[in-house]
Length: 404
Image 1 (cartoon, one colour):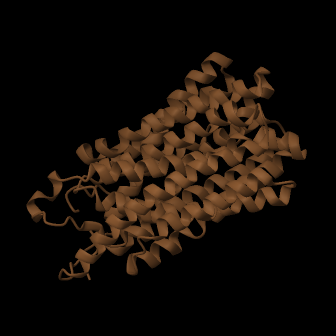
Image 2 (cartoon, rainbow, N blue to C red; image 1 turned 180 degrees about the horizontal axis):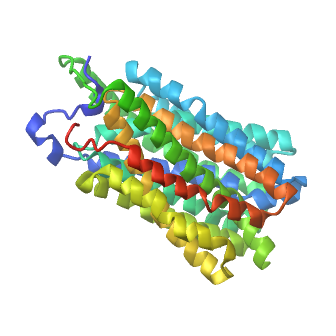
Image 3 (cartoon, rainbow, N blue to C red; image 1 turned 120 degrees about the vertical axis):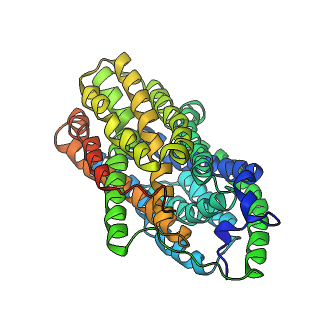
């Protein structure tokens, strides 16, 4: 059976690259926006939850760890299974888990309920990301980097909206207002039902075509080395991102004595810069090679992270915008690079990298919460400032532009 990842019905092979399904890419990006907006609400209402349930920084980290582990452990398994048995209708089913978690979070009366709500939202994410990344590649028309960037920008823009909406809708009125965001989950279900119908049609066409042989561009040992380097870079990126997404509001409140709403707006600005930067990595990688985008994104951000802990409030805002913009360009390039290393295993690769990214974010939040409890939140940023220097490992990535 042919892989559904590379099916473009009715289009001759020589014309595939000119026919990108922007309507489907827009729809899956919008779904990603709604999905990640809901997820980011959990992070954005941490100060509210801390006040409501008298939580320590370690407990805050446990919420992130629960969410990230539930959203990471299942993703490679989901992706591996759907590589062999595509499940177009799993997309709206996953969003139903997210909707259940939202409702429970709005009604949670204790810390255990908050953890369970985070786990449900994370489970929805673990189903959504591998299959939606596959849809983006199916709709790419051969412009894989561009397609992943369009898909990713929706998620990152959604993540940036969470803190802003939390500041406007939840912080002034309380935890119960989280339930209103169930409407966003219902909208996502409606959109995903339409995407699933398109996905199912592509799968039927794929089954009617002769098998397509896929060949890896590199020997097995070089693929293992390259994947290991990419995972190291994901660790560097998402461990650092965890310090911002989970603790930036606390850092601003503690160091500069700003209000909760002011801190949430600063977090929104950072996450908006992340969303803007996401659109750079994919299309630039299509043109000049993904290795160079990865190199510039991870290692290039190091001077700014090293300056951040010593900056004033104004320059903290400026530096975090620069950091978010540059660092965000890496993931689309990393993911497509990995997909090119292992063609025909799009779901497994997507699940592995999304899952590892979320897992590192959760582990980072938990470890950094312990550090903050025992030392100070400011020390967290001084330690994390050195993580982007791991970008030097990009030197070990082979250039596969002429092999794929």
